[in-house]
Amino acid sequence: MIKQIEIDKCYQFLLVTLAFLLPLTVAGANITIGVIGVLWFFSGDYKNKLNSILSNKLAVASIVFFFVHVLGLLWTEDMDWGLHMVRKMWHFLLLLPILLTITKKGYIKYYISAFIAAITISELISYLVWFSILPDPFLKASAYNPTAFMSHISYNPFLAIAIYLILHELLFNRTIKKAAYCFYSFFAFTMIINMFITGGRSGQVMFFIMLILLIFQFFNTNKIKAMVVSIFVVSIVGVSAFNCSEIFQHRVNKLISNVMIYPDGESRESSVGQRIMFAVNSLEIIKKHPLIGVGTGDFPVEYKKVSIKNTPGRILTVQPHNMYLLVLVQLGLVGLISLLSIFYYQIKFAMSSSVEFTKNFGVVLPGLFLVIMLGDSYLLGHFTTTLFVFMSSFLYKTYEES
Image (cartoon, rainbow, N blue to C red; front, top):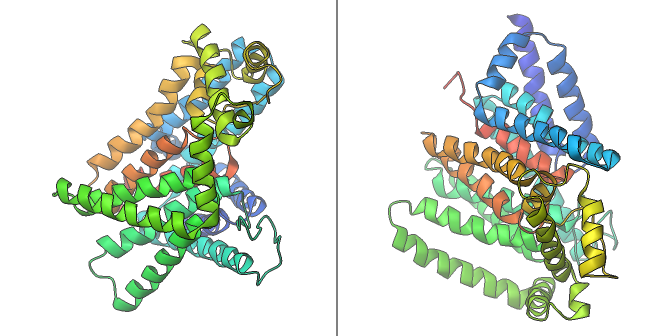
């Protein structure tokens, strides 16, 4: 019993460390995950661990999603790329099931505090580069797009989640002290500004949707009021950001122009034009292989065939920057159902929870990922996949102590 208590303390220290390192360093987060994995595998109590995993429908859905990718190797031609894609899915076989067995209700506030502290450091460095106090470039940050530790594609979703967590504390914590309220309000304000001096469009879309969901959660019993407030707040923030942020204004104008003139050759070379082209070509592959797809490793090969025929001379890709299209091409409807089952069990669990935070954030997390996965394959990237898995690990489980 004493040994188990000591192991649990080690787990919680490592989980808080992981929450802090996750937005800052790939190597540090991976080392922490490795230590957690080794401790978990060699600490015994395997029967209880297995029962804990099998009793959690999200954990089962996660494992099934991984093994659908393994099954897809049976009809793939490019086994090397197929194995590469399977390795990309390791979070769903190992990390999520393991973390679901060791997170503790009493430590959730520490996980979240460590995560927000790390985002605050990222934000501070972002401003220091933006104001030319730190050299340009600094790490991955430039004055035009100041994201130091990861690309803007990943940074803005992290920032949107952090803003939600802070705003939720401000709106729903009835016992928050005045000093803490002022402190959180300040950082919420600076993080919202930071959202629009960086260039992650998917994260910015995620932010606006998060804002709408949060307002509807706050005005839970008055949908009309929630709608009016949502329109007002989103309009004010959106117009202010457009008029005050050069990069936000530029990327919005570029998005609109690229969509409007997509058939134009130059437009197709833009990030938006490329995504439209990838989607059109991917849909042609899906029509030919709707049920089980072309196999886990055959997206690059099959896409190249279609691209040569439909869009010769255009850029090729190994993934369509859309998680749904990627899964449909590789694994067909079987794979898509497997992917969506993860989100189904998350939302079902959240909706049935009597804990306000779990009910609210438990719906927002999958909701936001379901949206941004239209713009990129966010469950392939290390940062965003680990973020999704880590947040899921303490949100969607029944705690014995509760």
